[in-house]
Length: 290
Picture: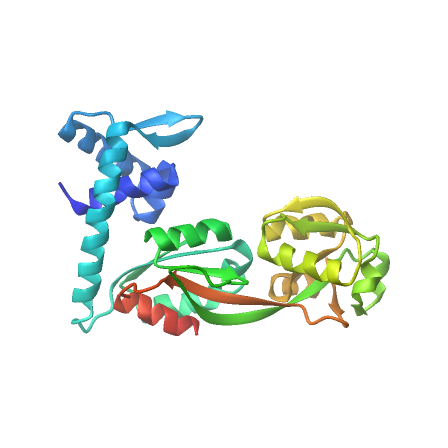
């Protein structure tokens, strides 16, 4: 039995998806299916079942998953420690972040890193902040990049950067003629917002409450691209990180206004499990980000 097969099985159970497990291990979906069939034949047990379109482990599969998780984690730590003796940086970096960071903050650092270290595989996935913390703690990913990275038990935070938050509107919106606005100007305005558990939304709502300003949310979304498209058609205003709308402002499909009476900044942090031994690849990746 290959350790890679156990890792694929763990990723399948955790993601609930053949395509996700395939992507994380740089193989095809058919290869994932074949490895599961190999395990089922070896143990003469059905290990997974499909429930409402999602893959879930059977009781036997759950037992194998728990044991495999421990085995693969121990092997990964050993491999990372041994790699530190070598001169060539290789291996993998497993990273998770939110769309607004991955699409607009990581493109250039990733290009530079992959060019400098072509033997390293970087797996980047998009997730919600709460799940990123869970995956960091479980060891499923090496690093997470999140907004407003509050300190948590067993989690360490490395400061990454800060983004200014700006007010955006459609080009035909009455505010489009202005370059700036105050929080008071937002009273009664229609907004397209992030979902309530998204840190950027929570922080903006705190500012509104402190200023005793009420806005009307007509739509709540978790994807920055969808928010921008909805704002473009005039459905409402939005507060978004400035790097995410540079292209739209340049092409004049959105207008951006600075908030003058509040300094709205979104801090980003690299999170990892406390005490985790980093492979040379992960160490170099962190250095590239910083």
